[in-house]
Figure 1: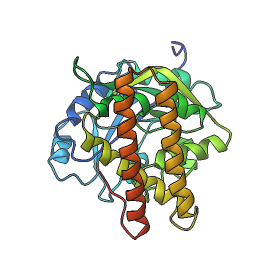
Figure 2: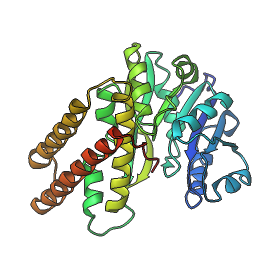
Figure 3: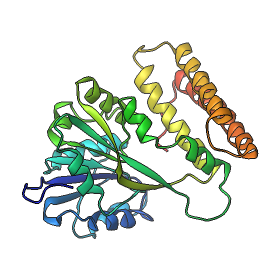
Figure 4: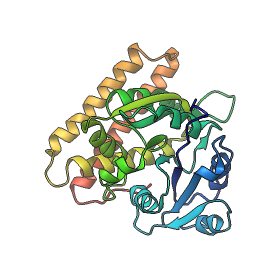
Length: 298
């Protein structure tokens, strides 16, 4: 915990929102319920061109700064919020997440170490029911939001990220030209600059697990679009090598399913079969992009 005789820093929490009218107030409620002093906490929610009434809800919600970013993409929304942020520290999460009451306070304690550039907090999956998990939920349980592994590789996801604001600004913010993968790109920059990315299991947000095949495939196509844009556009990586990596990733995950992950035999088959289908979807999406298609937003 932060020592009581040291002044606490101002902190800004940034949340992009797109068509989140059904969930955004739940997210905001957990941000307002933080144990951190409210006079030191700024909450910025950025509507990113929603087709529903998300922005109308935000404008009527007290205690937050509601902004609009018309350029599609959550990284453009985050960059807009950074220009309005007043905190010495910035924290990022998603509109469908809920934050633990000590989320901010625990993150600030970790950032007392000046060598830490990013606190990569734990993302706990919320399955929301007590029944048997679907194949999609099992897949999420196996492979989604592995922040400890991310931090070890020098990356972090914006579902749960804290950094000194000046560090983010000095790095130029997020790449707003990509729809997915901008968090990995910026965190790699920070890591290569010599800063540590520290996994913090006590800095917790909860994210709903994707329960359906449709949700999982939409996420996968979006991720492939971001990765393709970062790696292949501008001839940065030959397309055959990009496709080969998709097969390699699938083989590595298949090996984990068969040998390492704590799954029952039938569940291994369920998750393995889904993995093969998602590999085919990933390759098809890569070819669509190579033929001139645009990255998907959702």
